[in-house]
Length: 421
Image 1 (tube, rainbow, N blue to C red):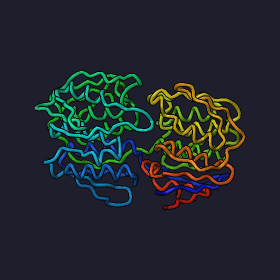
Image 2 (tube, rainbow, N blue to C red):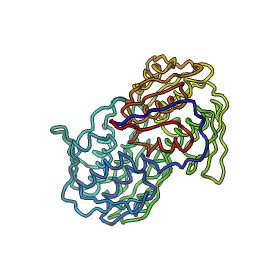
Image 3 (cartoon, rainbow, N blue to C red):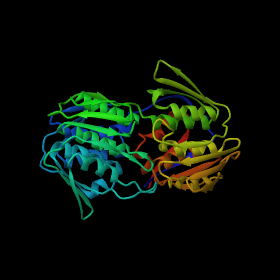
């Protein structure tokens, strides 16, 4: 099991290129099940989650191969099987995104329930509600969700939930609806850039979708989709993570391949915390910071601060001059990293769905354990600014969402090494 050894205190300087979005790549890859034509997707990052989904798609008759370092070609040639097995689904919750495409094209799906995870329970009841409205019948058997439909029919569907609209639920319903008979209206649809990217990809394949980027999507079913070549959007969470790294180390870092329009709430909150941004040529951003200031942060559905940036912002608050309150409105239990940060000298107190963070002068290196993808990124950030040596264990989590993060940080001047045990 790999771990990172980080010697903190190094100022980050230089250029770093942001990869294509993991959270856009996965549902778009799954949507390739909707056509029997070959599809080429550009800017796909090399991640553990991408490889996990490739194995699931292979089980479902969709073959894939890398054409170059960032271009993946996918081609569905066999529709015999419609089962996503537990041994593959259990490695990645996001694999539930195959449910909608399977029902949309094959009218049947058998997908292992992904279960819970350390960031909290993430039920799929809204996925089922939306797909049932399209005339799908479901049953649960032996840990699997089985869905069947003779003919999918358009409907008006409300997808709002207790913690806001559902991102993957919107993706699943949208993928099923593009081949349904008639018109489907999704109210309170997720507006995240990754959902917009999926919709734009489907349109490039011949789907008819109106209202992209808004809370209401109008989908007119078509008889078939065709292949296309498509480039996914930059990863706004990776960009935010490297912005935090630059700010924490009082560095001077130029990020390439950044979409500022996807990061408004994060940029606004970081500016409040003392970070300065200079955008040039539309997709480049220089990040500097002299001193971090406290700020209150609340995670919300897009266009609010994303839950996937909560842990990184908590590290910034941990060394800011003053007290911050961080409130989690998406996954109220997503604070596993707080205890590990406290082991590094942070002063964080949990009160329900909020974390009270009193900034300290410095963090100190310690052995810590990563509990999930974004928590592991936060611990790496903490290690960059901590005194002496930090050992981050279980970094397989970070490999799910960051491509060779240690190599990128090294090029910026960080002292970080991967150790394989």
